[in-house]
Length: 212
Image 1 (cartoon, rainbow, N blue to C red):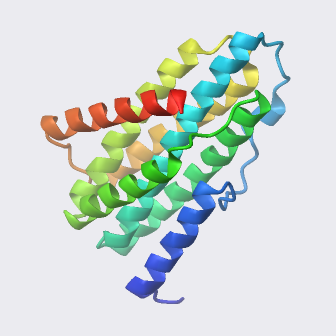
Image 2: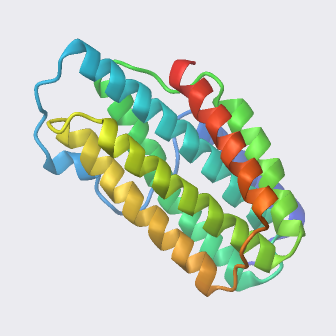
Image 3: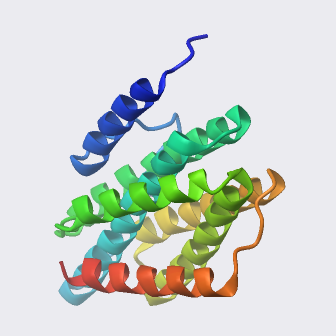
């Protein structure tokens, strides 16, 4: 087993950032859930809506990847760091799935992704430096908000867009599991002002990614 130095971790984070932003993330062994679904007949407005929603979800996963990477840099306990790294790897699955689906329906990923990633790494590192309990609490609250966000997208998607729905359903299950992991590992509930600020920031990002 190699003991990574702080510089090693910074360089690894740079590699993850490049892969995240340029579409070559390291994924897990899991198959894309949309592959088992047939393509429904989508009208042009439905394809445009699906593309925009998948772009928003992809931007959210870019941000999530940044948060996990930032937290892994400053997490104190090895077990916490390992769990965050596994969760980040599963977020890579989401990245790949969302980007592929967005392109399938004729859309693109957000041009603001570098901004989302850089800001999220910074926030994640600050959360990690505050202590593992707060860092894990931040993960739990982030994932809780993501689950709520995905539920809203599932309601907006056409029922016959089975490929997009399969991706979002799997993402929802994963995010819920990540939130549970963070709580079981000792995450503490964040103060209301912090949760409110997180919701506001998320709303700004989703609105911008929907159009850009």
